[in-house]
Image 1 (cartoon, rainbow, N blue to C red):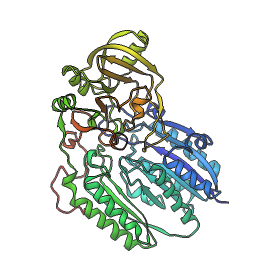
Image 2: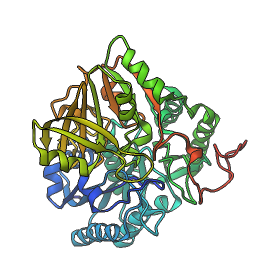
Image 3: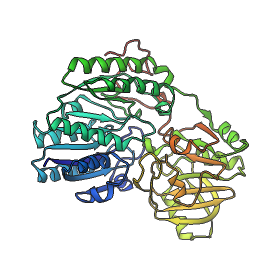
Length: 493
C-alpha cells in the first residue's frame, strides 16, 4: 500500500500592509495537526480535502502532517515561519519513509528575510525526503512562481478559477499527478514563463474579460495527450520583490520542448492583453449616491482597496463615512475591523445605545469615524463559508458585534477575514439578499456568491492597502523595466 504524506502551509503576503503576519493571522485561519486534519478538513471543499478524498478512494495510507492557513497579511514573522516549518518537517520526518508528498501552498508567501518562503518550504521538504520521492504542490492562482519552487517539486498545479471555486478539484488534480509519478506512468517536466507584469485584481476573474480569454486558451492545451497540467498565475500584485511577475506553468509528460513551447504561447496571449487588465472604478461619493438612489437592491459596493483577502487590514472607514455623510435611509450592511470598538460595545451590552469611534486602528491613513447606535448582537466570530468558494472552511474574525445606526447595520470585528462569501453576514442573521446596499471588502471574490442576486455591482475607487492604483505604492525592489510602470514591447527578459 502506498503511503502519502499530506500537508498545508498557506499564507499570501503583502509588502505594503501595516499588518505583519503573526500567530494572530494563522489563528484567524486555522492550524490543524496530525489526525485533526482528517477530521476537520476532509469534508471541506479545499485542496487538502480533494487530495484526501482521492487517496481514500484508492485505499492509500494517508500520513497527515500540519495544515495551517493564515488570513492574507504582511510578511510572516521569522519566528512564526520557523516554528511552523519545523513542525511540518518534524511530522514529515516521523512518517518516513513515504512514497510521495502532497503540499497545499499559496505560492505568494514571504517571510522576514526570505522572499520565497514557499520555495523554502518545498526545498526543505525535498532535502528531507530525498530526490527519489515525488513531491507535488497545489498553488493559488495568485502565486508568485519561482525557479526554486519548480526545482524542488515534481509538479505544481494551480487553480483555474477566480473567484476561486476549484480548490477541491485542484487538490485532487495534484494528488492524481503525484500518484501517476509514483507509479511510473508519467515523467513530468515543467515549462515556465514569467512576465514582467503585475495587474490589479478586479480583472483577474475567469468569469468574463481578458483573463477568462487567457485561461480558456491555456485549458485548451490540456487536451493534448502529453500535457498533464496547465496553470496561469495572475500573481499577488502588492509584492515588492526582486523576483516577481505573472507567469505560466505547463507540466508535460517527458517532453520539455512541448512544455516550453506551450508555456510561451500562453504567455504571449497573456502579454497581448496586458492593457485590458486595468479597470475604471467609480469615485467614492458617486458610488454612494448611485447605490442610495438605485431603484432596487441589493447594490453591492465592492471596496477592493481594503480587501483582507489581499492583505489589507479591513479597517478603512471611507465608505462608512460617505454613507453617514449622505444620510443613507435604506437598509445597508457594512463591516469594519476595530478591536477597541468591539470591546467598548461588548462592555456596554446588547440593547444598549453607544457612541463609538470606529476604523483606522492599524495606521494613520484615515481618521476614525464617529457613529451612534444600538448594540444588536455579540458573537465569538467563528463562521464557515457556505458558498462555492472555500465551502466549509472555518474563519475566526474574533469577537464581533452588530451595531444598528438608523438603517445601517455595522458589523465590527476584531480580526480581518475573507469577505467573498455571504456567510460573513448571514452568520450574524443579516441577509444580504434583503438589504438595499451591501458593502464587501474584496475586488472580485464576491462575484460567485453575490452575483446571482445582486441588482447592481459598483467597484468603488477608494484609498487603501489593496488599491488598484499600483503606481501609488513606493516600490523599491521591483525589477525594471516592468509593466505598467514602463512601456515594454517584448516580455522576454
